[in-house]
Image 1 (cartoon, helix red, strand yellow):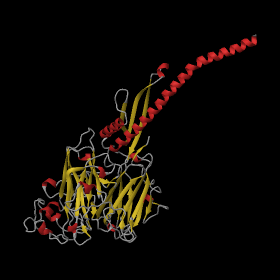
Image 2 (cartoon, one colour; image 1 turned 135 degrees about the vertical axis):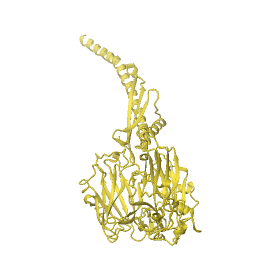
Image 3 (tube, helix red, strand yellow; image 1 turned 90 degrees about the horizontal axis):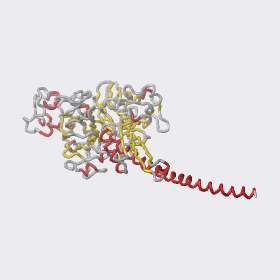
Image 4 (cartoon, one colour; image 1 turned 90 degrees about the vertical axis):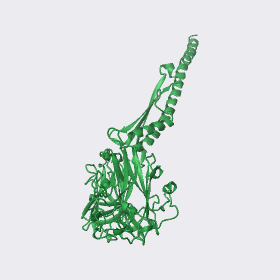
Length: 571
C-alpha cells in the first residue's frame, strides 16, 4: 500500500509540474517573439542609418547643414523620421569633419512583454560614414595660377587670398597635340614610348575635359557670399611660344591702346615679349594654325553626385573662345586706332574675362569644366555631358594656358578653386627652386595610402630634383617618409619592386635621363593618427618642389588618389 501511494504521489507531482511549466513556456515563447521583432526592427534601422550616413556625408566638411538635411531625407525614405517615438540625429564626428554619424532611436511595442511588465523596448542604431572625394589639387585659394592685374580700374586690383605669382598656369591641350608635350588627359595620340599608351592611342585621354572644383563654404556664423564672379585670365589661344618670344613686339609704343588696357603704362608691360613677365601665359601651337583652337568653359552647380559630369549646368555660365592664326600683328590687333583692331581679342588676350556671376551661391562644390574638343557654337548640354566626342571632331594641336579666380562679394576665404583629383599645369619658374601646392589630404584620410602620379615632369635641360613635401605640422614628415615613401613607374622602381625614396625625393630628373613623356608614381601611407586643420583651406596640403639649376618651363600633369572607397561606412 505504501508503494502504491508513492507511485500515486509521483503522478500528482507530474501533473503539478505540467500545470506550473505552461506559463513559463508561454512566457518564453512570447519573449522569443518580441526578441525576434527587436532583431528585425534593428536590422531595418541599421540599413536606414547606413543609407542616411552615406547620403549625407558627401556634403562634408563644407556644408554640414545640407549634410543633415540629406541624411534626414534618406532616413525618412527608409521608414524613419523624427516623429512620435522615433528620433533621427546626424552630426559630424568631433575632430573628424569628413565623417558623419547618424543615430536612429525608436520605441517598439512588445506583443507579449506587457504580460511580464515590459510593454515597450527602446532600440538604438548608429552608423558613421567617411567621405574622401576627389583630392583637391593645385591651389587652396580663391584663385588658380598666376594672378596678373587687369588692364582696367575694375580689374587692376588682385582679389586672391594667396600669393599672386605661384609661377604656374592652368593648361589644356588641343586633342591633336602629342601626349609627350605634357598634357596627359586632353590629347588623343601618343608617340612611341610614351606612358599610358596602346600603340598610338592615349589611354589616359578623357573627352570630358578638365574639371576644377569651386568650393563654397559658410563662415563661422553660417553666412555665405552674396555673389561670386568667376573669371578666367587669357582664355583665348594666341601663339606666343612657351617663353613668350613669338608674335609679340619688343616694345609697345601706344600707352593706352584699347579700352581693356586703360591704365597708364599698362600696355608697355602687358603686350611685349618676355618669359619673366607676369603676363606670359606661354600659349604654344604645335600645328600650323592656332585659329583651329576652340576652348570651352562651363560651370556646374553643386549636387550630391561624386561625378562632376552628373552636376547640372548653370544657366548662362558657358563660354567659348576661338584661337587666332599663328602669324599676327598684335600691335595693330590690340590698337583701337588701327584698321585691323580686334575688340574680342583686345578684351580677352592677357585680360580677365568674366564667365558669369553666381548670385546667392549655394554652399557646396561647383565645378568648372574646360574642354578643347567642342566645336564653336556646339556647346550644348548634350555635348558637354557626353562621355565621347561629338562631331565634328577638332584637330588642333597646341597648349592654351590661363588662370582662374573668383571675385567674392563677402568673405573671400569662403571660396577656393582647385583641380578635382587631377591637374595639368604649365610651370614657368625661371628660378632654381619653386614650390607648388600639390594635393590636399584631410584628417579623414588617416590610415589610408596616398598615390601621386606625375606625368612628363622632367622637361628641363639640366638635371634637377623633384621632392614631395608633407603638410606643415603634420605627422607625415621625414624621417617618416623614409622608407615609407616609395616610387615606381616608368623611371624609378617598378610595381613589383618599388624604390624607397629618401625624403620623398626623385633625383636626376631631366629629358636626357628618360623622364620625357613618362609617368612616375609616388606612394606613401598616411599615419593612423594623422590630423590637420580641415577648416583651414591652406592647411593639409602636400606640396611639390622643383629644384633645377636653370629653372623649369614645363607642362606636366598630376593626379592623385587615396586608397579605399571614397564614400564608406567605417562604424
